[in-house]
Length: 224
Image (cartoon, rainbow, N blue to C red):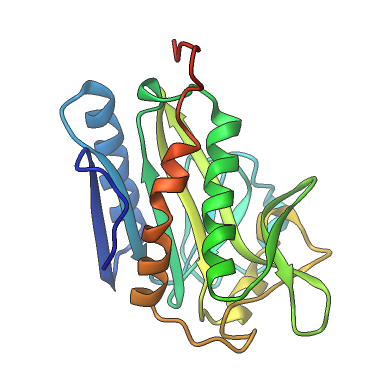
C-alpha cells in the first residue's frame, strides 16, 4: 500500500469494528499526549458499530429515533451516524507545527476526501452553508456522502471525517444528519461502486501528502 505519510505521523488501520466510546477515549488520550510532545501525530482509519454521535450544536428535536446508542462526542457540529460500511478517519495533528488555521485545516481535510472520491470517478463538492461532502445521487438530487467534524485542543486536532462506502442508509433515519433535512444521504454502493476499506484506504493515503502540504505555513510567514 502506497502511504504518503512522514515517519512523524503514525498510521493506524482497523478492519475490525471499534466501539465509539473506546475510540473517543483513545483519541482524547492521544490528543493530550501529542500536545505534551510525548506521542506521534496520528491518522486512524476505522469502522464503528452503529452509533449516533452528538456534536456541541446538536438539537434535541433532531434526534428522531434513538434506536442506537447516543454518545456526546465533544466535536463541533450536530448529530451524525456512524456504522458498518462507513469508513471513519480520525486525524490528530499538531497545528503548532503547521499553520494555526482551523478553517484551513477543515478545508484541507474536505479537499482530501473530495480528491479521493474523484479517484473513484465520483464528483463531489463543498456546499456553502452545509457541512459535509456532497455529490449527485441516483435521482439527480444533491446528497451527502461524507461528514466532517473536528475539535481542537491545545492546537491539536481531533475527530475528522466519515465517508459512506456501503452503510445501511436507513440508519440515518434516526436523526436529522448534521441538522440538514432538505437533502438525503447516499453512498458509493448506492452509486453503483463496490469499494472496500482496503481500496478506499489506499486511495486516501496516496493523497495524504497533498493534504499535509495544504497545512504548511506559507513561505515568509510565522506559524506562531
